[in-house]
Image (cartoon, rainbow over the protein chains, first blue to last red):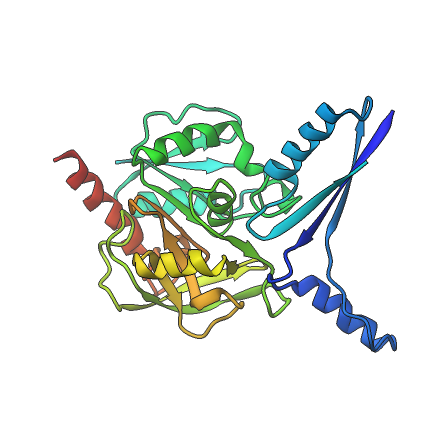
Length: 77
Length: 224
């Protein structure tokens, strides 16, 4: 059994209110220099990692895991 | 006039939408997310709520419910479809409308009586208003912040497809956009809840009614 990871992030030009809230909470804890953007990580169990499987995961990510209007994604294996 | 209202797991305002249809002279028809049978309806409303618990993204999972294939096909053929709040999010996820709704810039759930300006009456759902009319409609959401790339925003503005605009932007939506339509004008999505402003026994503000009465005019015109 292998795991393929898909990371999804809000596009840089899109506001990230969650990241902003985390950044502000960090400041209250004394972390002044940090600016946080919040995304999602998906771990997908697959039988084995092949180019075909990776292509299928990419299609899965594009249609469901990420909304490419506001998010970008990367597939890592 | 048979108007279908889809119930997804987590829909909240489907009953209110059906009541609004009854109060404005239509026949509400219950549609179920897991069935692809549209039961011969003349129009469809995707109601507010938190379909599938807003898991993944608001509307992202509902967009792939069995009922949606039919709705997408029929909407592209001209079936009037109205998406309210979560319904608007689903229409964006389904790409029937451009852009996306993200978390409110104010980082809070927003619930208020929201003043709006009606920007376009050239849709299936807004002909009973007048252009420039100021109305007040209930707004209640955590993710009503409308975003799209600059080209899309320019296209919406150039083509007169912004249908409702906030007077006093409550959530960071680009160009104060509260509701938009597709090129044909049969699909409309908006974040405020017109179905909560229709019943005189509950509120003196009946500014939501024209959305539902517009549809009757549109369907009459469409069959002539």
